[in-house]
Image 1: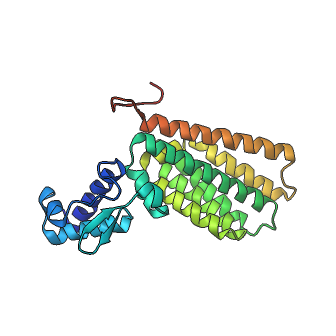
Image 2: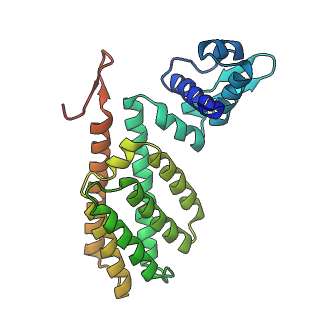
Image 3: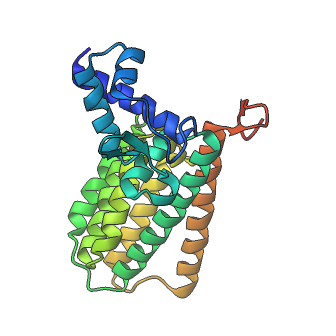
Length: 255
């Protein structure tokens, strides 16, 4: 196992401990010597490991003291949030995922509505080609959820670029990175059949090609369907991750 892999694995374990509350904000992290001894590595590698943890935003170096644990939930930015999502307990991860889905839903809805009402600039041939690829992936015996979701994120990103929504694009990119790193989160986005994702995009392309735009009733129906879809996504993630009872046991939400 390479030294970089060791550094990443141990940094992830230390981050997990911070996320789980095993190390409290304001406390000192174990020293370089202690990390080296616990994980049977040399001190140079232990120093790199703590440096990696600092790059995650979970600790900060204090001259003459070592590394102090940050209050990652209160003071962390989007990069910290990303790592925190990976390492948190089921209950915290479910709450974080719910927030992510709600933000993503708002960005996507705004992008779709704004693009529909704008002077459309995206080549529909490129859109259709991407949706064709999604359909081929969806029809595989084992659909490639990761790739399908990645294509969808790229499509929305291109819509945001075309309407000049740079901040929303940056936020969507961050949410996409977080989701694509967690297999349960990816699977949750396919609470319905993968084919449904393809059908939605084909319907949107048909509206854009018609040039007339959707009616108010169609928009209301679309928003309702979108809301129901995201409720199913959150429910599916909860089912996959489970919840924790007072005894610390993890249970599926449907149990």
